[in-house]
Image 1: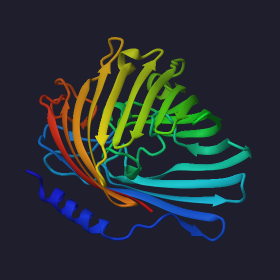
Image 2: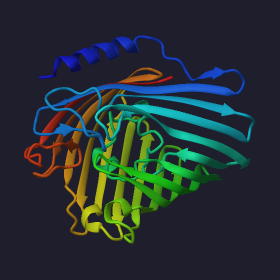
Image 3: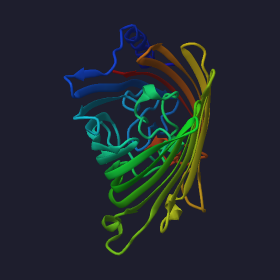
Length: 361
């Protein structure tokens, strides 16, 4: 049975969707303000462990949680002229602590020295996924949340502090955007925080009329001195491939990722993928997905499989209400989506029920 928290959120979300939503707001001639957010609640049918998102430490059980999916993002962009601008974005969300925190996810200066060439200096999101830039902007995505099996696999959770350059080349009916990034990152988990040096990324994105294909790789050198002392080194590698299709009423999306380590594959090596399919019917978009994470190269990474059914309702041009039901199996391990299992494992498949309201402003 759905709890009273879920029923109250559904009612509040539907009431809020009845109010008008507005576009980004200009502040004078050079500043633009925008915002996005999610009010979400999730509960499960088990008290054996807490269902979490990515690196979170506190989540949902038979008691519903508002912290798992809820967030608020604020962004200000200052444009000096056609070739120089700056962007700052804060995000308030639960990350690797048991409460909401606010931090700068984006803070960079962008220079456009030539047409279709952009250079950014500062802090940006590391584009290791198909929807890296918008993974926390629920309104930009079909599903209520990205698949934990895939989006919880990358350990470089601290973004990138450095420089990136991208170039968009028009080819026939499509556009090929290539980008390179270099700088420092961080691996922040509930149990440790590591500085990550020499982080570099290559990303290729092909945008067609009704489809997108993305291919990328990141390599980095984590600083392991705080764990093993001086003299221990490692090269972390994360590979990803993804695609989207949006044609007529059909919406498809899928990704495949690999995580590898030059010295610690026993603990790191894993593969993950998901496939999502939906069919647009007016303002409704029902969808289904399957996701899987499994160990690679005889590692001890815990496996997980998730089957999800959901629906998105675009009641307004800037707000959407979503419902999602999941069946999560961990093969009697801790899995990828659970924190603090009572006996170290989740012995039975878990069913989750989620409702969220996403908005952009």
